[in-house]
Length: 363
Ligand SMILES: [Mg+2]
Image (tube, rainbow, N blue to C red; front, side):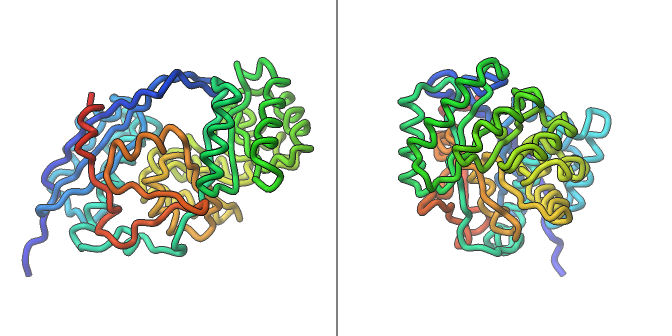
């Protein structure tokens, strides 16, 4: 029996993609998105993963994860995940550290599939041929004409759901928020699922009033009506409105999923934050035990294969910032048509490789 290859090296790099102009939701402003990339080498192959985070995540990979990965069996992803998690105990294993771990975990799945010369869907399972997406953007910093451009792009892609940001200035002008949602309904037409995201901008009372005001527009999805840290507040809003309450984009692990599941109508998970494909599947199982659908948060290129593996998936977020930058970062990112994302099931790994042009954005 020949000796199996070992993990030889993990290369880390970071890329900054400026937005066309400053963007904002209800509680944050930004002018760029940073992708931290991990490339794991073994046996003449390499696996690629990334997270949307800060450059500090690159330092975590180099300082805390690299040493426990080198020399490991690349097929033992569960063992590598546990070793990485343990290595971050004293710096805090959630948040930033879990974003770093997520990038590496995705790279490990890609590497294992490439070593076996199979698509990553062969390893993860595949219960659907294509993954439904909803259009997402509509920043509070956008003018009405930009919202119209967003909606036109989502219509052209066949999206059946469309989501905009509300809660402008920490909920300082709810009348503006309601008018913006009405504009979305007017532009999108009567058949599109209307979705809004307040990014935790409201108080519980505000969120209940806005949720009820948006009822006549047929609001289907109210994301982070209050802070995701406020579980009783989420539960109170959910009990008071007809739209589904969604949250979960900051979930780091199965414990977080377990805490969030009882207070939402649909659990959001972000594979670049919740432990990569390994963590995503674990948290999805927690949601299943609460009879909840899950929805993939952002990062559509990375969600495509793992979203195809989860039976109780509702959709994945086709988020403007990431839709714009993913083809700049990688070659082979999946495309959308008919409101669905194609799943990379005919190429080894997840089918993506760093684009040569990404060097222009490297930090
Ligand atoms: Mg959100």
